[in-house]
Length: 469
Image 1 (tube, one colour):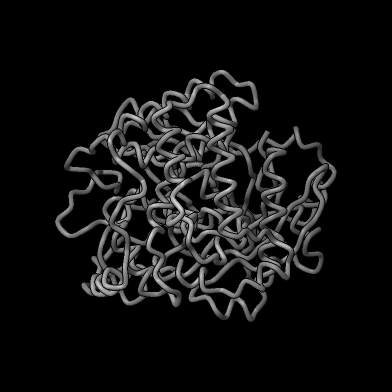
Image 2 (tube, rainbow, N blue to C red; image 1 turned 90 degrees about the horizontal axis):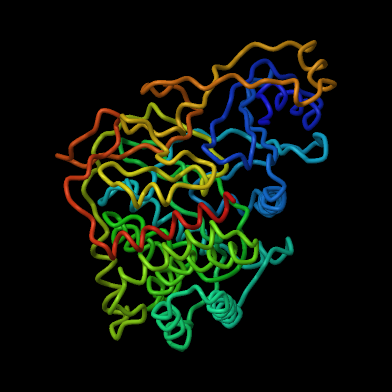
């Protein structure tokens, strides 16, 4: 059973013994039960987020997040053009631990709804470039993982071989991936500090002078030294904005242009299917294996006749051209009523796209219902919210001794309306000029999606399944 916000608020006083909690509200993460989270208001005026693993598999991830946040010293944070959560305290809660960080305001945008042009896309590219420009010593001093290009390549080959060993991987994909792994030119890259695969929904935006700008980054548990392309694989899920994000990324990077970064990013996105297959095989889950096989066959059909490593690669002239294509037009005004401080974006960013059927239902994260949205198109992420409520010191004392099963969370509101507050975690849609809007505020696609683009974007859904299982 999910822990109630009141129970989580009680643990805040253990992690921060010299403060009092005067109010608490639910923080909807849209996850499939891996974390419980709440926003607490302290007597000194601060707002903090308290998180606790609800699934044993989430414990190591939260521990990695703590280590990464400790590595972000004030000097390191000064190198970033956006904020990262401050680690405020930890405490025990039964057989697990709670983590308390400060609350970061802002709203999120799902990759599929990221518009092109100046604004969110260009700010995202610049933010990723800033992370990748951090000194390697930040990671190594904390003992976080560091991998060379040779180690990255070896890990990719090992994953492909494990997928082949299941005897369920389409051979066309096995050959395609092995050709990419064997291409020496693909693996000539410079290692960098990376987020380990964080996507667009890991970033928080605020409007600065009317332009959506990255002001925060929530997901740090994958902080390491590795291939910068791992943080670009989500571009396959942002067909409209991918070129502008990448152009801004190249413009903001102080390193030599990486000729094959997007090709490796595409390979990593496709290999999420292989991870899903291997996970199901190792867990002896026939349902996962069957689902992975269906996804892999769809991918194989979508990329038939295509190669990951092409003859044309980014050269110096191409890099200069990319700098010239960074958009300069102002972004349209948007509604910023939906703010967030989500801390599990890999799980909560999955939206069921409007005007897409069957295949999207198959790609819903494990633990979600088959649609992930009501009939109006409004997702479930923004509705599991309770209002901030008054609590007393007697309430907190009683909660510390109360058995967990005795605490009943408030039922989520129903209907189409999303609560107009600043702790809703549903990604919003940034509209483009002249674009139709649905009644729920989500973009209405006016055109179809070809099979190849669908297959590329499907990899993100496979990753969400794998993490949520």
